[in-house]
Amino acid sequence: MMTHSLTLRTIMLAALCLPPMAASAQPTHKTQPHAMAGMEDMDDMDMDDMEETHPAAAHPHSAPSTSTPTTTPTPLPPLSPSSRWPATPPAIPHIRYKHDMPPVMDHGTYLHAILEQFEGRYSQGDSQFRYSGQAWYGTDHDKLWLKSEGTMNGQGRFSDGDHEAFYDHAISTYFDAQAGVRLDLDSGPARAWGAVGIQGLALYFFDVSATAYFNAQGVAGKLEGSYDLLITNRLILQPQAELNFYSSADPARGVSQGLSDADMGLRLRYEFIRNLAPYIAVTYSGQYGGGMGHAGHGWRPQTSTRDDVRFTFGLRAWY
Image (tube, rainbow, N blue to C red):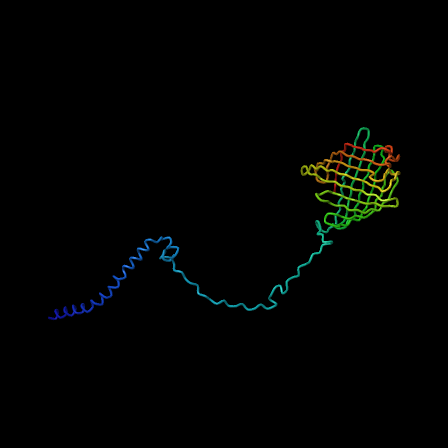
């Protein structure tokens, strides 16, 4: 009897519990179509896209992202005037070049000397020796400049000897102004001249100089120019010319009015070492006008023009 009453009680409790269990199971069957539809849509998706869009979902075992807690920065205390460096910015020095020309190398003092011509000139039955050189000492802006040239013929007579001393001052990057004196000292009568001129490097690297001379007898002028044409780095062809003009003739020295004489050369040198180079050349010297036949120089009669072309070889050196 006790067993039947216990069984009946159990059945009644089960009957009471069935309706809620059925109600809780019903939504599960209602949401299943939507879940299946979502899974059908997921079948159409690319798994790579899923990884890019939801990396955590593509890799469920990856470490979860952690967000950095935001902290409010603590403001630094203001610097005291003594702790600031520098308290005031240092002054930028202002460099002023003399005549607004920066120095070529530096503003040191230098000595330079060059012997452009130290040569023998040969023709049939005659020979000459000629030299021409110059030297300067000073800074980039101010120099003492010396020049000398002359010719000695086969009889040992020294002619065409002029020697100059200048104070040289730079007036631009490539040109200097010169002022000084010139002395004509050779076998003929001596002459003294005041001199002013310019010397420098013209466009396309032509070495040029133009000098005017004056004394009680008149004025004179000299134009010089040369150019180094590099065939190779050491083989150099140099054309050179010198022209002399006088306002009045000086028969004692064989000088004529106007274009009195010219000296030209075409020299080919090879620089075995940079400051010592032998050369061969063809040179020309001409005497023009009525003053050329002075007996003291052994020149030809006055009425003719002397053109003298010679084979030449020599040595060029500089320091």
